[in-house]
Image 1 (tube, one colour):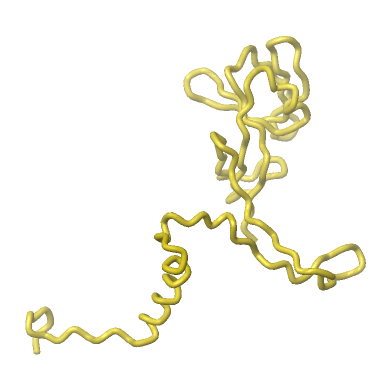
Image 2 (cartoon, rainbow, N blue to C red):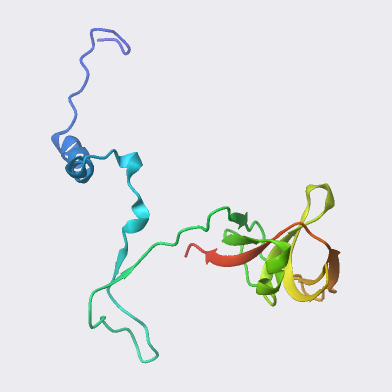
Length: 162
């Protein structure tokens, strides 16, 4: 029979495909929700070992590691080239700070808006009134001062694939 002929029989799906699909849907059906309505952040990863200083050990009681959740209104930085402590492929989640909360980001890495849609990612090393003193993460960089930025985003979580 030629390829693409309308009379060509459609291969029957393998039985295990339907079983897997049904297993994925069953938890949703039990609680009367669609999969898109579920909050997957309530699901954690079971911890099976810890690494104190003297080797890996099983936990004494069941522990769960909850996946990270970005802060409301946060921003992220996708690292495309290694700089400072960050490697290409890293994702840095940041929490937005208003000018009255800039002091909370002292000695932390921050993203600061610059004119013409540019940004500076640097360490906040000082604040003098409305001026921020920032140390870029590149080696041998000189501190730079930014006056009256509307906001800054403080690095709060590093996501790195191994």
